[in-house]
Image (cartoon, rainbow, N blue to C red):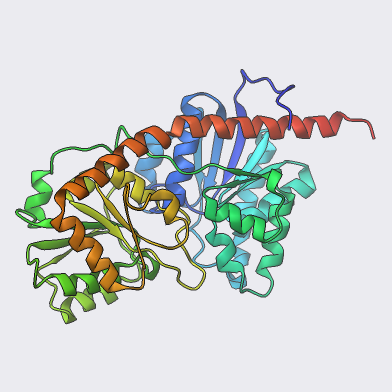
Length: 408
């Protein structure tokens, strides 16, 4: 694509469609927010985000809304991608059409295949508005086994001007289903190293969770099976007799919580495990810094898989060594033996060995954390990613304008 023709001094008008947005938890939401916020800060875009209401949205929108980044909400996020949910598309479709009627957008971006990708495809076919799709990888693996969804998925991706792959796992899956390599642009997540940086342990958190004198393991994620909380508990059972000062702090909420609490009780781990529940995004750095080791042995669960794992970068940016599952895109976020350790996510003994190693060899743990910190600061800057996405946006706009002005 050529870069000539588009006035690079003017911000592009973007309509960003996503089923959920911050303060909703999830790495993809953090990814979209940071890309948009950084492009808005550089005045590269005037973006309108059309999304759903989630807990805490009023305070978040009050703080974040500005001329360059405007958030419009209505309804609730879809619970599943199943067809019985599709009638709920009427609300966001009407709101999107209303926004388009009032404002001329250069591009649509979407962060969810259903229904936002479907809506983007319709708007392109009916109104001629080009769109950019995002892919994290699990959108493909989760829909592979469905009867009709792969056809819809592939049609949406084929009509995108560009597909932004958030990691190598996503890029490889896009190639696997037949998407042209030249239409895929990889933009891996970044990390805010001003917010996530090493600090002293917060004494309030140490007191609140009884962590004084404890070697603390930490997981920050939704409580769902593929994040591997249960595997950490199994590893803890193997370690607690030899290392009674181990503590495991779990940050997050989700459908797996009741099952995890039952396992903690059944396996006599009540004295070692703490559930912190929901933690505001702005408070996460305090939790990373109260830990000694970040551990999340992510695995695949019926096609649902970790596309990248931004939490590993956030922990590294706080100077912490990390342990991740050898699954999905985690190997791109964690350099085995340099910034952390990769383990078989289904092998509690291997996980226990990795935790034991880092607990016993503190020099090794410190080296991994320091290497992770240097890598996070050097290689995962949101500013460069925002400029990369801006180049993509302007290339798309120029290419579309050229097509429209070329005589047939």
